[in-house]
Image (cartoon, rainbow, N blue to C red; front, side):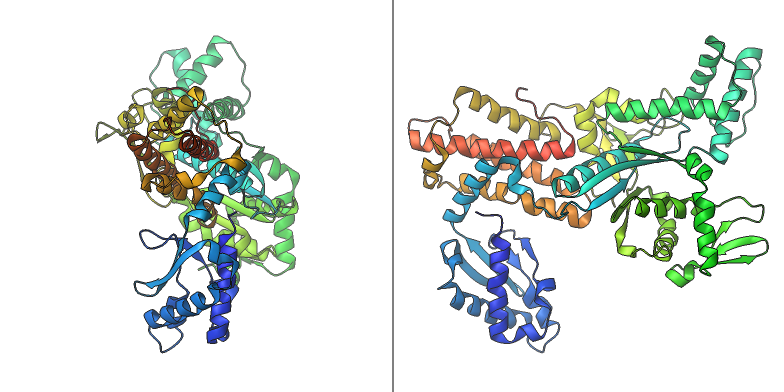
Length: 547
């Protein structure tokens, strides 16, 4: 026991609803969702609120009737050993209060299963492709890309943990106008170096110091470059890969748009759309009838000069994703791509896939602050703060954790000074310190008693029960991360675990004179260490034994 308490409670509620005739009003399997309660019970259900909206009875009365029926059936139900009380509370919530015996079994479950305690097989080995970062190889990664990298990698870890067959992919936009501008920028900088003449750069050219570095590299090595765009792309891609590697992010596949174009897959999918009547010609351009598939207006895929718009390779790319056998696609994009969602969803529908098979997550931007003041410019690059600069200043652990500390839909403020502090004010330090403190105690004394013989009923103090209940919530939190496709809630949860542990440790001695109590508490902190380590690992953050 007992991560399946929801299933048992669900069956009990169904029985009560059937007894009251509510099963004819609402589809039970779809509506019976649980959520963690704060201050009222341990787990709650809001089915009464949903039923009240479809009947003339107020939610509070519906909740009371359902609760009375549940309590009648509970008398002879196996759950009676674990459910202390069921109450109708608030505006119409049904709250379940679980007893100590249930939570002692939860503790044993964590200790015996370790990280598998929260491993719910939601994915059932379904192939899932998550595409993220995908920055143009025209410069080092910015903090906006860094945030996408942290979110994408942590989300991939969580989805893999929950049973999906996950592949991480970087879409490499290695052709087109921006790549051509990159080549011209390098070429002009090299000319400037060789002639010692100041050249006026067009406003849209790349002017960061890394362009000068590439030009000097060519000069120092006396390289003869035929294609400056190809050279620049190759060298910058090396920089990007090294930055991501140092950030702890590894991709399974780097997918080249140039190779996609060479393969003929873009022309093939557009020809297929023409045959199906999904394209039409107007003023020399070819338009996708995206309004037939839910978009607000039709979109050009081939311009009048014969060149492709961005949408054309994207349609071919996503067709290729499905052809490779992926049943679920997740794209992480920056906020400047928000208006692109509907047209790609329409394209996916035209490809014959369900729009629900593609999830597009918009990751909002991040602002870097120092001492409560925003940093507008990079002192070294002259353009923007890079991932490398953040890594060099605060390290991998703080960087990854801080980039995850807000919902992806919210703008993130990253304070460099807070990230460097080794105090409770720094959340990642606070969590890692809890893990290290437990490790220190366990180095002094490991649990000696056999787990089956430990009497956890000695854990009676409020702080002890609070800690067990918080550990129990781990699988629920991972489920929230899955349903929202956002690892943010895991950062909040780990801070709460650390807080509850520190409160317990400050008020109660682990190593005391009562051996049975000591053994129970040693197992309690060992379970805490397991949950902290598992959560930090999913976020890509280290678990220090000493600090």
